[in-house]
Length: 120
Image 1 (tube, rainbow, N blue to C red):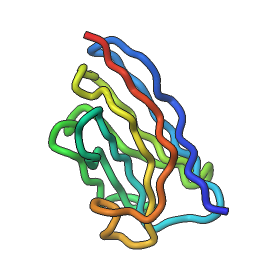
Image 2: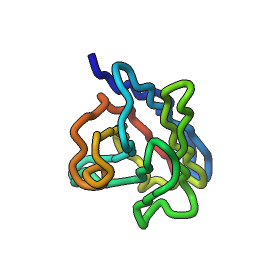
Image 3: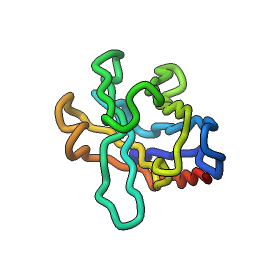
């Protein structure tokens, strides 16, 4: 059974850092990424990458502050979030797809999400 299990969310002060993790069970994918959804807003792409490495894509609001990476041996995707701002507050979702293109728009597989709250 395919599962994506996120962890690492929590409460942090503005300017702080968090690292999210997403463990993949059941299969490997061609590409993976992170999305977020804040209350009252649409879900948006945070970052994505090819599982074999490279092809990183970042949302404009997180460029230079967030970094996506993966550990293929551990089947784990990471999102290092630095210089966090109150507007980064959202539920963060791990996503995966068997293609290299759909990951930035409508990935087929989703985790349950982990909440990130940044206080001012």
